[in-house]
Amino acid sequence: MTDVTDAMTTLFGHRPDGSHLLLAALILASTVALVATAAFHTRRAGRHSSDPPPKDPGTSDPRPKEATGLPAAGTGRGETVLWRMRTTVRDAPGSLAALCLVIARLRIDILTLQTHPLAQGTVDEFLLRAPASLPSQELTRQIEAAGGTATWIERADTHDLVDTPTRVLSLATRTALDAAELPLALRQLLGRCTIHSLPAVSVTGRPTGQSAPVEGVLEETVMRLRDPSGGVISVERPYLPFTPTEFARARALVELDARLGPRVPRSADILTLPEGNEITVRRADRSDLAAARAMHDRCSPDTLGLRYHGPVGDADRYLHHLLSPRFGRTLAVQTASGKLVALGHLLWDGDETEVALLVEDDWQRRGIGSELLARLVQLAREAGCDSVYAVTQSRNTGMVAAMRALGLPLDYQIEEGTLVITARLSTSAAQPAGATTEQAARPVDERTVRPSGPAEGARR
Image (cartoon, rainbow, N blue to C red; front, side, top):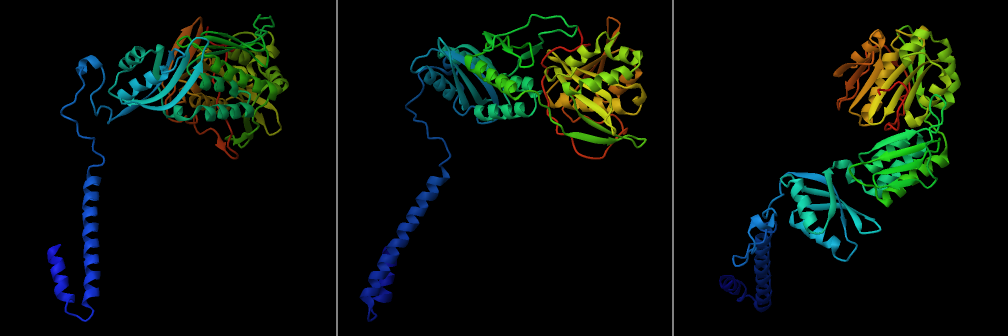
């Protein structure tokens, strides 16, 4: 700085206005020096801003790491996993803070938190991002040491990142558009659970005695809700009791379904068969009961026997059951004149899924059954089903061939004289079963639905 000042004095001090120029030069030189100094310190600070603060050599955790059970500093900076965790704490100040302190010390991020008040205590539900190296057993042990009880934990995925109000509104919208969405909406709302739709009257016309009060019933791991279409919707989750908050949300979805009444999307696909005839594939429901009954009357006893594995005593009752959105989904095939010639059912049998086909005799061996089966399998895959099964007889070569044409791993089993073919579904999209049809028009606006109850002809 002294050298700069001397140079400025020599340069400007001997000019007529030297005093003024000298003063200006001194100010300029001082400013440059200050800016340079500030820039140096800024670069130095920025170079180390992301580093952890240096550890004071005079301080340390008095407990050995083996005693704390906590990961060392820096753990969790690599791969992470998502966990859903639920635990019950006392309804007292500081209970939640104690849990959060343990979670923070384990280097875990809390992504979402819900609280479910109970008569005694509060259920706290977390969505956590934790180090992959942290065992779930250690997390559970630490939470329980901090005051949590009845702790439950399972792996989560990115779908759980959607906040609860948004998810509930989305499920309500889907339910409003399609009555068949109610069982799926309940399953997605409540997590891993088994849903059964128990009708008030069986397919043989006998009262089942199934009923529930309007307000429903909650019994720890089971909730029973009155089905708007008659009977009861039973939801079971043995591994985790339902909370009053979950019960209220489920009851609200059922009430929405009851207020809106029967409804089904009316979009369809127009397909061209190899011989040039056009057919329409669309959703079917109980409004198609008369057309489906007329198709049954045109089918031969042998065709009906292969479908129902025996004589059909009262087709009206069977069809009333099968066409209900509570027991699955039904696709119908109709001709250009509007005549119904085939039905394909995706039926919910507890936690399993059955596919069943009925094609009128005059329309068999034209690729209609294969087309329906491929679509049903796709619906099952989109619903998250691990497998589908078909119950038939070994002489039903058409159904056996259609299942084989899916290109999926198959298991065969004989049960009480019937053949059960189970197809294991992969994550890839289902492929049409052969080039037997050609799509000529609008895409189907289909959604998927979880199984809600047993169906006629399902495995026992």
